[in-house]
Length: 357
Image (cartoon, rainbow, N blue to C red; front, side):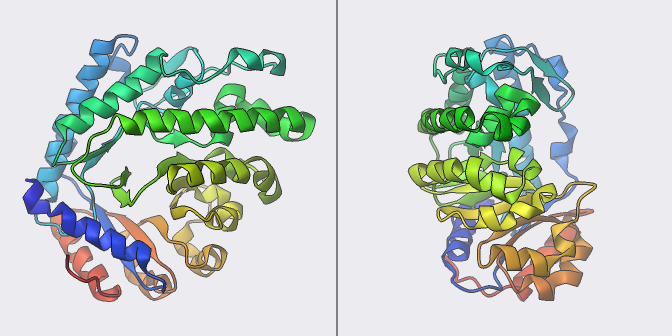
């Protein structure tokens, strides 16, 4: 099945996309109903205090991943087969502290564990924590299962600011003003933890191809970072308490891919200015302005930095001329496989031309 998808050819397009110095380049990732939809997961049906339950979950994800590959055969888009392991945002904090997790059907929440700064010395990253080992073991197990067929990222990394948000909860947003020196010192320490954890997890992976999987897209190197807390901050606050630490992580990890939300449109320029960033991914929030509806503003903010955008088919068709003013990975949910094939042809025709591998 891996030969039918021609992964090296897809990766070759990504390399050309990132190396381009001009605008008008598009990559297209399509999703559509298929056999993979026959498998669904309710996280509440697993007892994630037990190692065996994690492996049961991983095995289900592997089965689903192979169905996804089968579904995509015949669609020559830029979808990269893979598993980005999802337990919910709360689980990411469990490599830094032991806390109670509350699972819902499709995510989980971690209780705030640092209500008082006087307790901050109790917390540190440890590769020996139960959940630290879960993410490390998942990296090894899943990448071995998928070797030559799909890629894996078992731990999408919260940025240093997001880690503090996990530990402090909403108190973070008053810490900016009430405890700026304490917060700054803690962020410096957390930055080292983020890097240490990422190196442990990525070091356990074994892929047939170089580079890093990022939500069925790809970057040549580096780290997948989640930068959600920044979307609730002013640009000035982010430049002081977020940007320097994210910049350090990206630099030491060899680059990266940042996920954040359209609610944080005020941060587009800040995030796009990170030197080692390959691409800025913007998820559309229901009550916020969709990036596709304000492309002149978006491209004025990000310049030539590639963006990864959620789109409808109609948005791509009607905004294609505006899209040519930037570089974009376009993600579209299609009604069926035939519409996905049509959309790939349309986008390829409108994009600057990729050289074959």
